[in-house]
Amino acid sequence: MSRRGWVLFTLMSVLWGIPYLMIKVAVEGVSVPMLVFARTALGAALLLPFAVRGGVRFELFRRHWRPLLAFAVMEIVGPWALLSDAERRLSSSMTGLLIAAVPIVGVVLARLTGDGERLGPARWGGLLLGLVGVAVLAAPHLDGGNAVSLIEVTLVVIGYATAPLIMSRKLTDIPSLPLTAACLTLAALVYTAPAIATWPNAMPSGRVLAALVGLGVLCTSLAFLAFFELLREVGASRAMVFTYINPAVAVAAGVILLGEPLTGTIVISFVLILCGSVLATARRTPQPAPTTEAPAPTSDPVDATTSGPRP
Image (cartoon, rainbow, N blue to C red; front, top):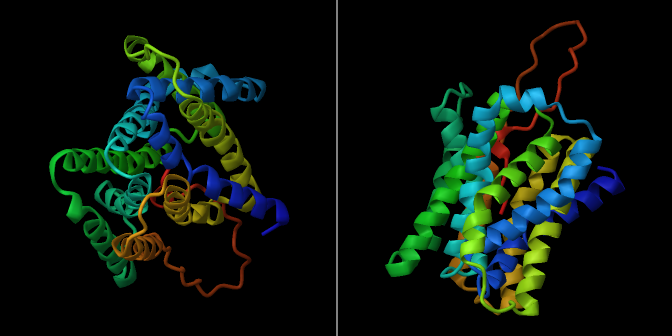
């Protein structure tokens, strides 16, 4: 991988590893609708000029408005609110680890919805290993408000695992940047009225405002731009490896900056979930058919089952 590729890879590992920390800080001072509105509105405002400059084919949006709406709901509108509400009770490091189960759930959903690829023993073992890791992490918290938060995070995981399937099957005609800008704009519009209704009575602290700006500018607009550049630079299969590093960044940020505990349970869960995700999403190496002809070139599409956690 080139030096530019490594820089983008490192940047993405951080930009989609620290949102859990910023969400944890932001929910201390503003409502969940206000948080989601600020993040999506900032992200849309910064991405829309790039999308327009690249040329927007509005007929594509009109033709695919149903899957576009479904994608926006499963990727942004629902998950970002549920995730923010869950972090009012869960630690940022624990939330980041739970979201790391997205690739595992993605494999299951792809299989259940028509992916004919055979799952070998290694991938089935990865699924089981990852689920054990989630169970080890979540079991001590199945009570009261924590149980509600765990349900919310579970719904986020399902949404994050479903959205790439919608994109890969229904929205391949729409370029990624206009698609993201449109979804962020839609989400901002959805949360405008709830944000106004829950507007804070006093100006939030500088710490909370910095977290909101960081979520919108760094973890949304800059992150998506860097992600698209990384895809162009190294291809989808190699680019998505950064999603296995995000949980470690989330845990480290929570421990170092918020003083969250680093327990043996968290370490064991991290190892189990990470190993399970790698095994469950590993592609079988096809055996080349004996032939004397040169193989035809292939494209490198984004694999819906390896689309990792997007906080």
